[in-house]
Image (tube, rainbow, N blue to C red; front, side):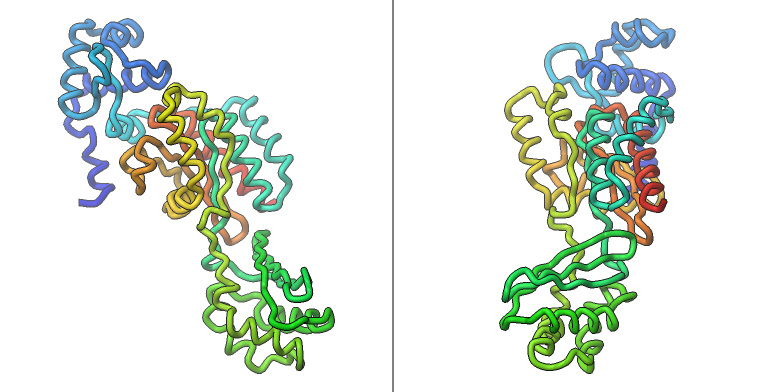
Length: 356
């Protein structure tokens, strides 16, 4: 059975009353970070049933795996599948206020249109507005098209390769040289590389670089030596699909550290360790399939055990033909309705600003 099929079955066995009580428990726990008791639910939500009936219903939900009792207290806390059912069946869309929209637009406006700079500002704005950890991965470059190349002399035996990708993404790679290459040779090789490679996808360049440069009019001597380096090492030099953590942007972790879940030293330590695992976050966030929608993974649904206590809410943004991912990471106790709206609006805003 597929993951989607399993999700469709979540909550299928619940009665209307159980759904109402579950909705109330989730909302209470999200708001207060305290286990929800039957009296609180009965008094606050106007369900038209007594506290005793609420208590019995909560007990039934506990048996079915939707609630659990963290301590000996009578209060219950939602499980991951309770949050999943809430997100899929009970969550209601909300609108951002004018102040919230203006705040996002103002923060992103400071970033300008360069992809990395704008996305970096967006993650910070997400953190402050959602009180979760903003996170974004730069556009995937598997099928990215090379716009132009520059070679910049750094020292007598090292040059900087600057690759501008269609859509505004820029990547740099240092190239070590076995011989000193004069400025004139750099110019010659730069012209040859742009003539043969500009307009091709990085994937195509990696696959066909030796054939494309073999008969290039790159000259002789130092220029020929430099061209030969590209022929021999081109597959490595043009593998710019960084998902090793260097292309991930994080917002303000301090807003997350202030949440009740991280009051204990151990939980705070796990949060700090998570933010240091940029490679893990880049893989977990960057490899998600969105297909034009906001994607939410809750607790154990995440592909890494280190994210088992967290929820990821992400959406795609576009930079020309490229797509990146932006969203938030937070505890499973999350105001899903608001966070989903903020992430969705932010991804749309980033796309609009990158294409303007």
